[in-house]
Image (tube, rainbow over the protein chains, first blue to last red):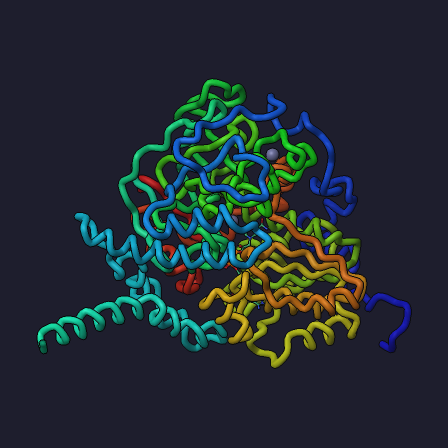
Length: 188
Length: 381
Ligand SMILES: NC(=O)c1ccc[n+]([C@@H]2O[C@H](COP(=O)([O-])OP(=O)(O)OC[C@H]3O[C@@H](n4cnc5c(N)ncnc54)[C@H](O)[C@@H]3O)[C@@H](O)[C@H]2O)c1
Ligand SMILES: [Zn+2]
Ligand SMILES: [Zn+2]
């Protein structure tokens, strides 16, 4: 079709679609769509029976975005900051708004520090981290690691090989560093 | 209680944790009967979301039974079977009273750019999630609903996120009668978005992925035409050919931050975290939609910048619409569609995994093994 005023012709009419697809057109009228318009002022719709919620008790200084006026009345209490990662996190929140790349980069860095700190700490517990069980990598055998990947047209195989390196690399490097360190000391 | 716990990128385990206490008069404690792993959880699992802390319990899709209620709770009582939307929200702030439940201002001290989400990093409020035996549910009078008797558990579970999100995504596309809708991504969100597009009167629905088993589901479950982008040199040109070189009227991005199809974009974003998310599918969406068309973004991206082709979006006069879905707002209408037999949400559930084996569940879903589409987690199994 040359470039004219028409929408490209439809392969199936409304009736054909209605016959083939259960519910075709049930929400054709935008009035039947619950999020149209997306904003609809209706305070009675939510079930809230307060103008402003009561405040949850703050059991430790809760880090918060400096783009907030105050600590929100309700917040999550998972995993309080601790260690070096905690220091980094508190700094990222106290110093940089969400608009600053530094805020997010420090938080991402703190996540990596947290993982290392936690692995190290786990070795002093009765349940040290176990990279085999925690990565679930044994499902490669029970869930068809080979048959799910090969002979398919999947494009994600071009980077999946990086994962074991990202996961195991730091462990191997750490072991290597220890070995080198011990050797250096032994040579003295 | 037993709970999934994050131990660092690609590592999770099940631990003994203390029961969550009531922390606020409108809290409830819910005993989880079913939970699910979502594509969003993979972004956490892969270490892409800033401030994801070791020790956090993930899980924002769950249903259960009310175990305990705070002093101000009026609408729920102990023993009620409830479905809980993935959003934590207060119901009374500027945003909640306008229906923007996913953008609540009173529940996330860590960020103003996103609302509260269960088990979804501190950037989304620092709440422990439902891949666990018990979970704290704030604003019990606002978020949870009692599961109607006729609704099956797994169907209710799908309403807490994936189905509500796909349905919301189709609505943001502003689909008119006869429109051609292209959906990138044949995961749970994309499948439900494709299915919902028909409800809104689409004339043609095309789903794109590279996983053949998911495209098969898109054909059977969502009645869609499918394209495996791995078979084409340039999927955008293919979409132009398919639409007589105009482009699609509406395109939905149901892929998000870990999009594949371009090694550099994927690796800089997903492996080395140099971008907030890999914008491959979003850029394909921008290029595949017609001028003046609408792109609805359901795929999630991190708070950092991504290399999005904004100039094309501008020059083409596109409407870009997006949000985390306000899940509960979709429920009354979704219930009608389910009762009428138009939707059977748990058709996409492929695996049911005991909580104790969740580490294998994460690996399988992440590496897309065993034709996995939606894994459901069963505590106490
Ligand atoms: N907006 C919301 O409220 C909301 C809610 C739930 C999930 N999400 C987001 O939606 C996205 C999808 O979630 P899901 O549970 O369906 O995840 P999923 O990982 O199961 O599905 C993603 C699919 O996209 C495919 N894909 C990868 N690159 C692609 C590309 N370039 N083009 C087309 N397909 C491609 C993958 O093969 C996979 O099948 C995630 O980013 C998730 O975070 C958003
Ligand atoms: Zn989700
Ligand atoms: Zn609110």
